[in-house]
Image (cartoon, rainbow, N blue to C red; front, side):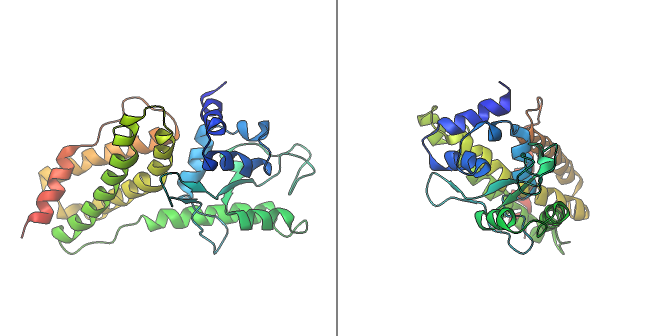
Amino acid sequence: MDAGSRFLQQMTMSRDGWFLGWVGCQTGGQTGGLFMSIKEKDIKKLWGLSAGRCSRSGCDELCIRFLTDDPTVIGEMAHVIAQSPQGPRGTPEGGEDTYENLILLCPTHHKEIDKAPAGTFPVETLLDWKKRHEAEVNEAFRSPVYSSRREMATQLKRLLIENETAWKTYGPDSSAAQLNPLSNMHLIWTVRKLDILVPNNRRIISTIQRNSSLFDVPGYRAACLFVEHAEGFETNCYERTEGVPKFPKVFQEVIDAYTAAE
């Protein structure tokens, strides 16, 4: 059994509805072997690049909701080309369980595309939705050019605070994870990395790149260390990677100093 299968098996064994729902969304409520063939890295890539939102043009529904300590997943990973030749947009050879053949949708739009008359939502339309949605997500990370160092640093500090809050609440060193090492906190952390830390890190990188002239030399050196950390962190979110640099505390110190300066 590969790492992805073990990861998903942990979900099906959990009593929490969001894990069971994640399995059910792929198989129409049946927890059969079809979903289990989707590799962990493909699931993470799909959710990460779509920012956890429905890819249907004009929808943008958030596919995971943190109403309590246990999140509720409403998103469904739909096949662009059905696995079965008789399924929606099916072909004789059937579609694969890969990122390239999956699209993240809310339940309403998953049902819409699969129940509509044949030809209403062709493969090309779904792939175009996915491409445009991921491009819009990427564009949302584009930073403005700030007029002052302090203005830039204030925005960066807000993003760093969001990251730190998620880390302290759900990360491996969080009080909840430490009190109960057997809890599902590490799985919640997996989701939070993709919908908070990775997007925020991209925004921070964009801010650094588009406002590099606002940094002094020591500050820019610290910023470059953060970029290396963030790039490695994101890669590790999708597929385990050794040697990822830790968060550079010197970067936090630089941002704190910039925001405190008159």
